[in-house]
Image (cartoon, rainbow, N blue to C red; front, side, top):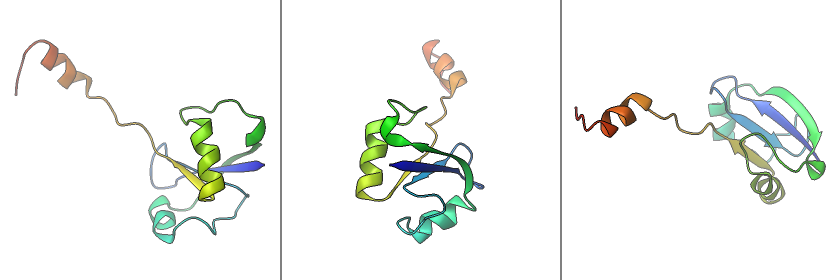
Length: 92
């Protein structure tokens, strides 16, 4: 099975995986509006991949089979200053 990956034109580090290139029929309209104009990043055979960047390959495959798409959002940013202040016992 081929998988097409698109990056969001509105949300940084947000990617949409779909089963077919330029086929967004299974993606909810509200999600597409939030996502913006999809920009193709790559098309690859997902069955032959053992891993992906930050996404769990098994979750991506399952979502593609069940829903027809997978949305990868960036992990939450860590506030290093707040963590450092907390480690020093400094409160705001």
